[in-house]
Length: 284
Image (tube, rainbow, N blue to C red; front, side, top):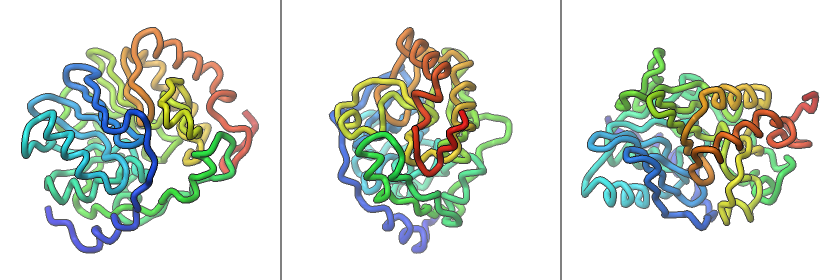
């Protein structure tokens, strides 16, 4: 599983982003086999015990930080069976090239995300005009170029199973990205939501920095299909998750999660959809 020079070139196009939060570098046992690690402003998940899978790969230029967190939890020279990507935005694939080069493991994603993971297509430009806050205003500097994993990335199985994760299934939750997925375990109703919804107001620099808890829709500046985003939130809320790890913000569970999701579904147009922006069609 050799990485070629063309792929290395692509990862260099994603510069280090000097954004942080009070939880950066903090890991949390959400469940005995679900660990949430915050890389600057985004969460990655270690799912499993002896054999495990990494979900998402954080911010650009942070591979060493993630490797250190892995070895602290699982021991020296430990590595996952695979990497599963909820989607291909820069803050979820930032370290993927470097980690695959180090670990020589496969990466899985939804088929609709593969063009953004094989160097074929760029995402739409982040919308700096969108209503929301300072992070939204900063978003035009965020990279939207694809990474190029070549033959190292594969489509997730059609049957909904997740390679290396017995008991979990993937669910297509588009809106924030065409091939966005979330992961769900029916046995204990555990949810890894990605950015389908988040537990911090991601557009606000203050709330991102302080990690103030608040169930919100997907990050506005990179969400291009609000109708699909709304349907995805409805789909996840219908599962009645007992615990959720989201791409941004703190893990949430129990009544706080149930009430927050119910409110988001009921009032999605007001809470999630911005009043204005390039991708907003305010006929809701």
